[in-house]
Length: 605
Image (cartoon, rainbow, N blue to C red; front, side, top):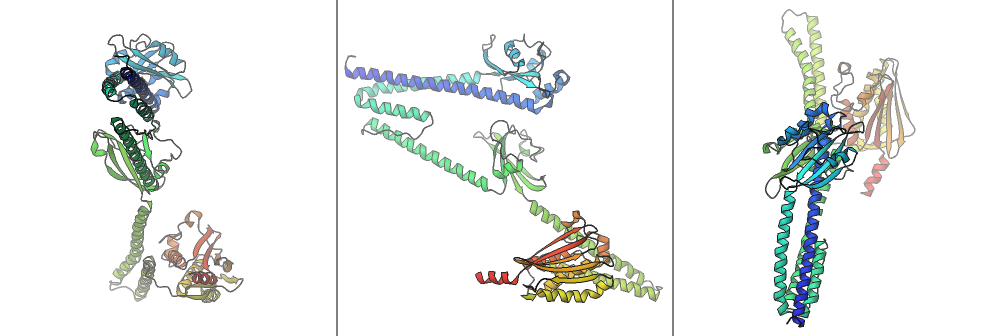
């Protein structure tokens, strides 16, 4: 019977399938075993490295002096079940000075080489500077343990001690046993199916099965773009069709997953907020470009097991995975001078166990600064109004006394009038700034002859300058025109020239020069007055900012003149800047668009 082609085919096919399943099973088991051991080894090494990096006591030359701190570090470290760490010191007579196991506390101070839990060869080899590891079987209970001895170097470059770690491989053995059981059952099912199908199909089954086997093996290697030829409409043909549909569906699913991943990556990449994700150990597992820039880790490889982040540096003080109420919230922090709103929440696995935190950083520096400026503005306005009001109040109370001399009454009324004028100027400036801010100012722009405007202003201010014997000159290489509001431009030039006169000592000078600097006409107001300190240059255009507050107020200033000038010039598409040094004079540069340039742009539109 077994000499017939039919039975020989069945036997051969039976053996073929059996061998194929055995090879695949052995390969899977071996690969799984190697992977499991590798995972355990990597985890153990990561724990040892993390412990040694966490505490500076491990890098000291004498562990005995820091024995209590080292023991506390090992006690506080979270190890997986079945893992134990021993701190071994003294190369000549290795001793256990600390252990993570409460049950092994009695071993502290005893020799490491004679300990039943420690392989002396690994300890000796490690003190020579190598990382030693081995898989050993406990003679007492038959447990299989992974042993790793890791040298720890002090800051002087010498080996200060050894961290010896053991890990129970029972879980690995259980996984391998379960895998073998599943593979055995799968093999039995496959062989039974082979015998049954062998009676129904003959030689036509050989090639399709081999083809399917080859393609299936390729898929186990990660090459999922595998298709088999359909040569019949029977069960083998249906199997081939299902295999091809499975491949097609799998590729579609993988493509969809890749597409979704790319979408998320694109969204995260172009988000204005910084997004980072960390696990429960503080290891960085994801960060978008803004998040990387925020943490200054643009060139660091993520998810390599070495990027342990300090929660305090992330602005997450008070976070504890033991208390879920602390894992969700928001707060404001400052990083490198910028203000961020930090929102954080936990992410969970399929069992709803917390795996780590997602943290979002929103830069609100501009809003924060605007709010700060708004508060400062309100405070400054209140202060500026309080002084004249206080003065008026005190003088009116004095005037209410009947026996005040007439001469004093007139003097007091003069002061009250001056303070009222000062408040009026302040309110007027505030209203003008408000109208500019809210775009309520209507500028009557027209062609303006700048030379004529400046000459007229200088002529009007000659008397003021002569009172201090200040010379005023105006120089221009040609006639210049611009397109702006005449009243606004006069206000700016007049304000700046008056400031130059006010803050220039007697016998000084104020020069106004005008030149062309395409596409602008540049007006420079130069004086040799008291100047502005360098540290104040950046703030001279701030509202209510005064270099010498008392003197500026005495000279009638509100602290808003330069702010108004800047807003007006920018409304005319111009620029204004100040160059100055303390006690050496000031140069105010005003750039206005040439009329020819504006007309050309209007024609193009």
